[in-house]
Length: 552
Ligand code: GLC
Image 1 (cartoon, rainbow, N blue to C red):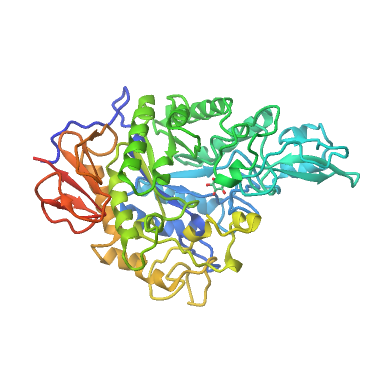
Image 2: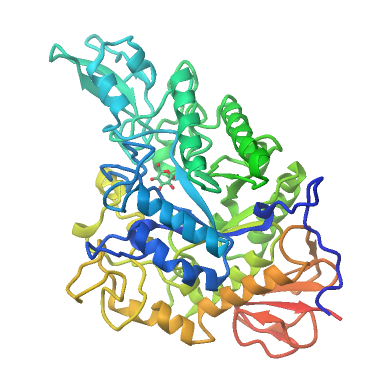
């Protein structure tokens, strides 16, 4: 009896389900998804070719990482033109074909919008460089005079997230060293000044440009950024961002004015909904210190969703998982929104490797735990995001040689610690050797990051053919999610469980349990599970395994 519970899905006055509240969205890192041209870099036509694969997997939508014209200092998060496609990835006509194809398959399309900073090649920044101090062109950014007798010290002591000072000095028209500009990431990514009305208006235009082309919403980069403390004062701990690689400088992030922007953007989305009934989604990359702060971003008139990163940052430990899940349910669900769960993305070490620490060669522990975590995430109330390759169980590529690393974090800090190339290696699709069908033509074609030989084991054709693969686990989980009314949005009820096990109920009768330990424990429900992340005989929950049951 699967359908005993009444549906928990929230509907509006017209009885329409808000699709995003429990949507599962697949993050496409475009340059690493599928290459249609043979230049070794994935592109929009590749994404279009991959849509049937994603449809078969069962996702509700895709989020495309930035594909706009960009010098690619931070792989497109340095945008030189917000309303076009970089020739590396295609053109606007190809973009339109992609949106049309996705629409026909019923797959939503979200774009990645980058409002905190642009590229130093953006025409407005070039104009600002050419203009005089105090000009309107400079007011769109954070230009300030330096300190010290010759103004040769930065205006404050902040450090950039990717290392080094957050300020760079410019040369003025007369050839002399002049003002400084603020960049919280790299010098090639100057921060916009959101107190300037032209910046506000320009982003309204950008949103409308893409909404008019049929997109279903936006993933918002650095959504707790945008505003800085108006006086730009010194920080007590100026290197905190670079040290933690997180937005923790309280003067540079999470300023109250940012909420006005999300209200404004929400109302633009609502305008489009009023026209045709289709809800447009705003999902924010919100890094703030507490779940309570996070909840402020998803108030009913602000963002629809914000990635809840605490699950991603939690160690493989039942108490840690239970704590972050409980906090999210209490603080975020209390706003009327749903929690947006995420275990992987293009900035983080992949779960298979992360949960495999300390590495026990050949034990498969990381993979088993990553599979269990996936079932846990898909059973939680709310929405979920899957990062490409997660459905294949790809591990992090940890041994890339220094000379191929492209992450600005590596080049700006000289450190391999927490670099992001290892989770961005192009996907394997088929075959025994690189490029594994990623790029068409000869095997001599070189993907932009080298794929290790062992990627052969993870290729999508093998994954589809093997019912024990990660791919089948994700596909089966997604299928059950879409058919069982107990899953998706709603609440959860924690159940008593033996030490090392987390168990919760969804609706009246769906039980999800995860054994974080390595030894088997009695299962919380007798009988065969509906779905399990590994072999799971009736009555037993093996170590590093999660399962779903319907209790009788
Ligand atoms: C976000 C993106 C990351 C990028 C940074 C700067 O954190 O996810 O990839 O480097 O913003 O735009």
